Image 1: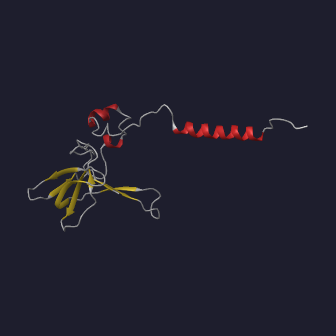
Image 2: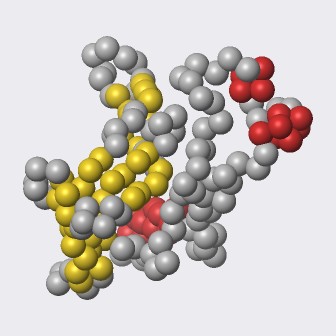
Image 3: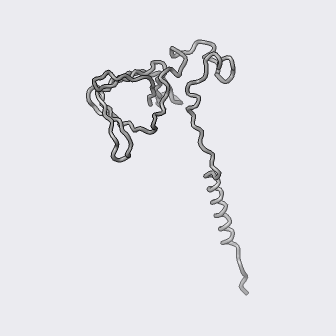
Length: 165
């Protein structure tokens, strides 16, 4: 899995140039034979989109962005999920300039020392975590209620209701 964010440029000839932020890109490497856990590496790859097209998708009935790479090969279409789009900022989310953090402030967890928070400023993606809505009835309650009703029904089925002479 690869993740990047940055800026885009429209040169005016119908193409798009995607310029990611070099220190923020990540690539998740999942090789169970070599590593016990997944490994995240830095990733940086600018892209040149030769042409693009915007149309309303006939199946989903929402806007679709069709991208074609430098050689004309089509890419996976992108669909507009939010209007206006909810996007990450076009500045770095990672305050370090290199892969290894050497400063004392970068080695300390941000929530351990309030001075580190003052030095680094407010995190740019602070509100990015969406909290799930709390419901009055949780799905676990239905499961436990169902098991309870099955047990009660089983006891009632097995319990004799009358004695025959």
